[in-house]
Image 1 (cartoon, one colour):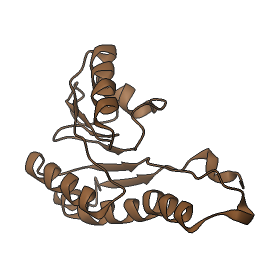
Image 2: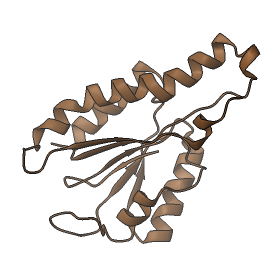
Image 3: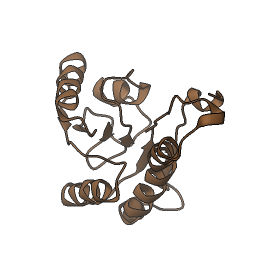
Image 4: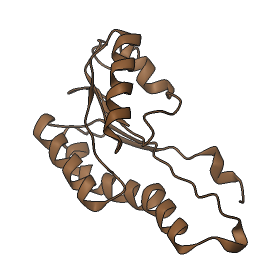
Length: 165
């Protein structure tokens, strides 16, 4: 799920539209009570690869927080998916002030039998996509950035990363 405040302050990226809702989208949809220049409720766009669940989550967020939540189906675990997402964002936004990466995958095999397939799935989403999405969005992050008010990139990891399977 990705979201951002249109033309003002936030992009959010996570992959599970069915998972728990992070604090940030609740704040944004509840009235943008962040430390932003002009607090107001702004449209939120979310993305995930599973379209039906994404649409359901967007409706749930819109209804729950009386805001506008727009689903943008996309698979950020692939280079093509990231490119499609970035092109869409570029067509809608002149700049981005925050990029919050909150996607994550795990693979339930024991350490001694951990497969290359599992490794690739986890690393593609948890590391590769964060790096390349940030790289591709850097021009939009830089567009409105200054020394006094820089754009920010925040990477959020999973507590599951602290466990050895």
